[in-house]
Image 1 (cartoon, rainbow, N blue to C red):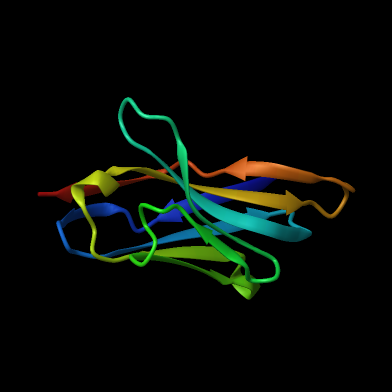
Image 2: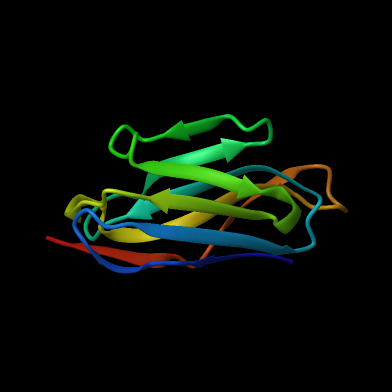
Length: 121
């Protein structure tokens, strides 16, 4: 069993900062990719940022220059530092990971439960 647990969401004012964390636990072989997605009410879930095994990162254009994704491999954890937050960033943020379990030769995809980020104007 694999679980992803997010933390760090909350309510901030425009221009404020939050740091989201996601820890993967359970039967884990390799984590090839970790990502943050978000979903606002009435909107489709969208990719915010991701990081793969070699450290390569990718960001949605809406958050470039404001958000930074980072990883702590020994702790199987990914972080999302969010600065200069805007009301448009309000959403439920979900952690996502591509994980190869020890007993399986293939990679599976997992989702966390989500953490609410609300940015007031």
